[in-house]
Length: 246
Image (spheres, rainbow, N blue to C red):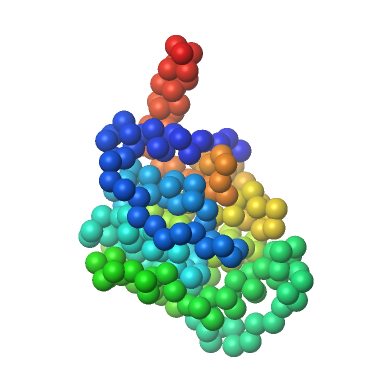
């Protein structure tokens, strides 16, 4: 699968004078399950490049990514963040020794952690940011993505970081692709993960039909709509020319 470098997103922001405002974020959690700083920067760059107003996040977890979306998006943005209701898993059991070596066990650990701490980072937000968030407690595999927004609206950005087994990841990904608009960007976390290998399988299977790219140096894969594909191709071409000149 082809890849694009994070600096391509940052370069486009610089070219469009979108890099002047500070990036707002909490310190990244030390515990597993959240995005890294470079990934947070890519998300912020995307928010600015596409001026995202309607955002869907699959997998709220503790709300770290949700908080980044809220703090760095347009003041009028709405963020719909989906995670499992407690009643779906009244009892989660797992072998703690397998949390870092088995993907399914890791998912059970993350579910229990979410139930224990809930959306702790969202609760730390100032009201001007928290008011953008709509928490949806529902199994994403049973959710009709197309009915979250009133027609004819479409999400500008869909971030997929929910269940990592093939069935769930494929369900989330397929519904995102089927309900996307002409300008929708879709971002996957845990692509190329040594633990959650089934996410990579899903993304690579879908990349045979859709323009999906890995983002080098991150655990991200991204679906780019046609207008952004052309933008990145032109940017890469210009960057290559600049490098040859120097």
